[in-house]
Structures are given as C-alpha cells and as structure tokens.
Image (cartoon, rainbow, N blue to C red; front, side, top):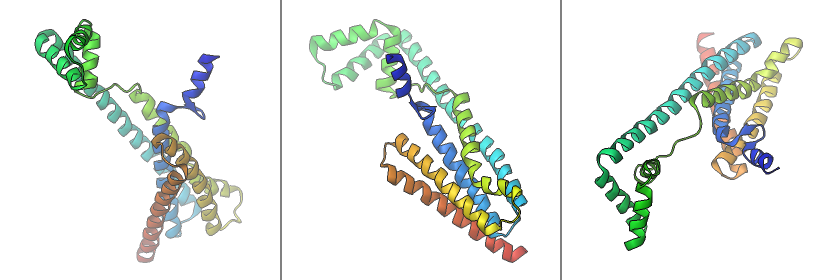
Length: 242
C-alpha cells in the first residue's frame, strides 16, 4: 500500500513529476506556435487546407527541433557532471591532503569545530564515494539529474505534438462540414487553444510553485500576444503581396 501511495505521489495526472516541466514547456511552445500559424494564415485570408498544411508542418518540424535541442541540452548537463566527478575522483586519489583540507574548510564554515570537525572529516574521507559526492555537492554545487536525454526529448516532442495539434482540430474537422466559414473556424480554434493553454498553465504553476491563476493568466497572455502578432503580420503581408 505504501509503495502504491509513493507511486501516486510521484505522478501528476499520468506523468511523473520529474518530467512535468518538459511536458509543460513543450506543450506551451506547441500550442502557441501552432496557434500563431493559424492566426497568421487567418490574417492573410488563406484557405483551410493551407492552414492545416502549415500547421502540421510546424508541428513536426518545430516539435522535432525542440526535442533535439532538449536532448543535447540534457546530455551536455549530464556529461559536464560526469566530467567534473571524474576529476574529483582523480583529485581525492592524487591530492589527498589538499582535498581533506577542503572538506575541513567546508564543514568549518558550517560551524563544526574541534573534535567534532575532525570526526566529520575522518568519516567523510574514509569512503571515497561519499568523499567525492560531498565535494560535488558542497564545493561545486552540482547534483546529477535523474532524467535521461532520451526521455526528456520524448516527453517534449509528444507534448508539443499533442497540445500543439489542438489549435488545428477545428480546421481538421471542418473537412466534414464545408458550411463553416473561416471566421467561425478561427473562433473555435481560439477557444480550444485557450482551454489547452489554461490546462498547461495549471501544470506550469505546479512546476514553478506559483499561484495557479497567475500561471494561467501568463500563459494565456503569451499565447494571445503571439497570435496577435502573427495575425497582424499575415494581414499586412496579404495586403502587400495578394
């Protein structure tokens, strides 16, 4: 029972807490950029098929690009941690007294004195792994993130596709009802995008530990600004070139 409760505590909805940030930022980027494409196409008075084509192309290309960037960023962070840890192992083997003195200085700064300080230094330096871990945390202020590059990239890509496809749903289903005009489709797309951004805003607030209403308002504001700019650019370009 305790194991099941622990598993439940480690998840929000269907996602592990440690990967919620990737889902949130992938989803925010996906929804905003795709809706910006929709708004730009609407501003330029392009047809429904063009909106779908541009939107889908954006989903795949930008989603893949964002996930690749996430992969290399996470990998670089892990590689940097491993490189520093390897160097610390070398130092505790080849510069023993100097590294012991660094441990002493670290814990002396924390208020340890006399015999207690000597005991702390002795205990930590008696185990090489504990010694190196202490140096990583206390001297370099580095801890290893348990998230893997493949998983973070995958979550980012999936959230970008899932949430980013929402602004296109009205246009995709419009193929079944040719009687709907572009203004009506854009209205439906705006409502759906607003709902998606609201949900993502709630998750974002959980990740950043901020007020939920503030998180929702910020996400909706950013989405609205991006869409407004795209609509304006589309409208201007349409008047110039078409």
